[in-house]
Image (cartoon, rainbow, N blue to C red; front, top):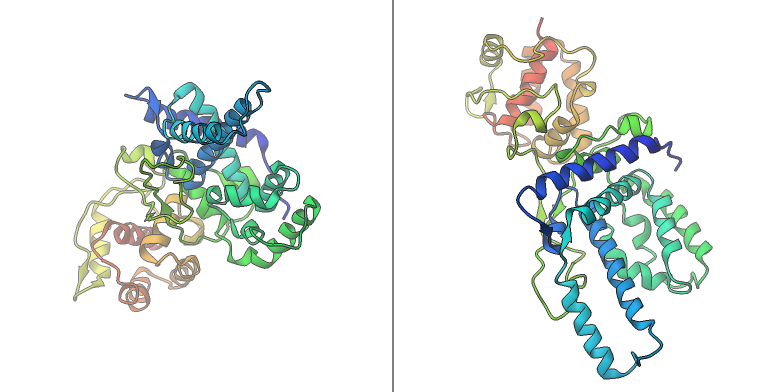
Length: 371
């Protein structure tokens, strides 16, 4: 998997992303806790890579203590006391902005890499493992791998690779070829970054539009326990849907092509869209950029729109959205497009025809065929 990376864009994006997150979080707070970090952004992978780095720092702190030649850290009483101390310490994560910002920047860059080039990322992870302890390292860190973990998770608890890192590297590359068609779409993963700052995958990668699939974002509820904070971060977690929210002014959350439609009934005859009523409504309003769309609908959706339509209107099925857009492009006129949507999608997918996502979708269809 060869990826052409614009490193300058990655550096600037990660830096700006970290700054925006910190500006928002530290408006009225001086510190951030571990629990706050787990839910810091809509991108679970970013959050967990921050926690992963804190886990590494926690381990380094323990190693420093044990490196002293003057005390017997193998003594059972010392071992138990030290373990308890380190566990308590892990549950008292307290990070100021100046220290959090570089952690976020690094986590964002890593998340983008694992999304776009999982083979290289996980091969680098193998390189971090202590000699002869690759399996232990992967088992210890698997809870932090939220994106494309299939590429490496098959190696955990497997035997037969011995202690040779090259065997693991080759296995990761070979396994990617097996599982690549079942991996999450690159663009959908990167879309989770857009809640903070839109990510231009074309500028970063120079690639064509990728597939979109549904992905739920986990929220972790970590309660105080006798074990460490890092032990309590579970691999399997409850889920939270990431959808566009109104927590900030819409001008700051959406693409310039995004247009909010005033709530109005656009349905009749039960749960069916009414072409005449839709045209009458859209024709009387002055919307930003309301003139016809150049090119296909599939090329005209903003990233946040594609993300929302896939999740909310098409059951997380990217193929179905692409099929719908292609069919609508070929409908010929607005009335035919509405009839097609009613027949194939409204009832089958249980659309709420007066909902904002449906109105926004139909507005795009209207723009496609308006003069």
